[in-house]
Image: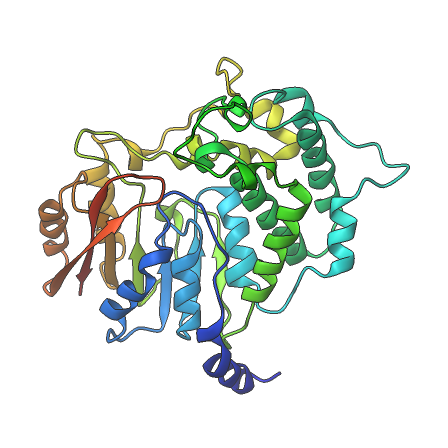
Length: 355
C-alpha cells in the first residue's frame, strides 16, 4: 500500500481506533483529548515522547498523523512502544496465540518464576504458566509478534495484581475473606489465558499505519541524538515531600520478564518480594531533578517543549516555568483537575508549552 493510501486510511479510521485498556500508574489516557486541544495548533511534524510509559500519548500523536518516536528507559515499556507505535502492520494471529499459551510436548520449560516467586505474586499454577508462556514467546521469530505477546502478558500480570503493582508481597489479599475497597476479585480469579487473549485482541485492534516511519527506542533521554520539532515530557513525578514514583520498583516483575535469561542476576534477594536491584535514577532524586529538567530543556532548546506535570510536585510549576524562560520566550500554562490512577485524591495536571 502506498504512503498516500495509508494516510487516507488513517484519516478514515485512526480516530476510531481505541488504545488498549491500561492500569499503569501515571497514565495520561483519560486526558488525551485535553492534551491534544492544547497542542493541536502548534506547527510540528516530528515528535518525541521522551518518557513514553504506556505509549498512549505517542499513540494519540500517531493518530494525528505525526511522525512519532516513542522512548522509554525501561525495556518492558520499550516493547509496548514497539508493539503499538513502531509496528504498523503485524498482528498476533490465532495460531500464534495457541503456540504461545500451550505447553508443547517434548519441550523442557524453565521454572524460574515458579521457583523464585512462589507465594509472592501469583499461585503456583499461574507461575508455571508464566514460565511456559515466556519461553514460547521467545520462540516466535517475528519481532513484532513477540512484543505484542509480551504486551498481553504484561497487562495480564497487572490485571491479576492487587493495586496493579509489584511493590510488595501480598498474594494473600486475593484470597482473604474480607471486605475490600480496592481491586476486583472477579478479575483476579479470571484465568491468565482469558486475560491474555483479551489483551491480544485489544492490541491487534489498535495497530495501524499513519504513513510515517514511527519508531520506539530504549534510551536514556540524554543519549538521544536526533532532533525533533516537538518534545512531550512526562517524567517520573516527585511530590512536594520528596517522594518519587519509581516505575522500576513498581513494575520490576515486568522488567524481569523481558530479561528472563539474566533475571537471576538482577534480583535483590534481600527484599521479600524479590524486586530488582535498585538503580540510580536522577529523575527520582529530589536533589537532582532540577538539574535534569534544566539539562533536558537545554538539550532540546530548538524544539517546542510540552511539559506535563502535577501542580504539587518538585520542581514547582513556577520553578519549571523559570527554567523554561532560560531557553524559551513564549510560554503558556494550562491546568486540569484530574484524579490519578491508583490515587484516591484529586490533584491538577499542568501542561507547560514553551516555544
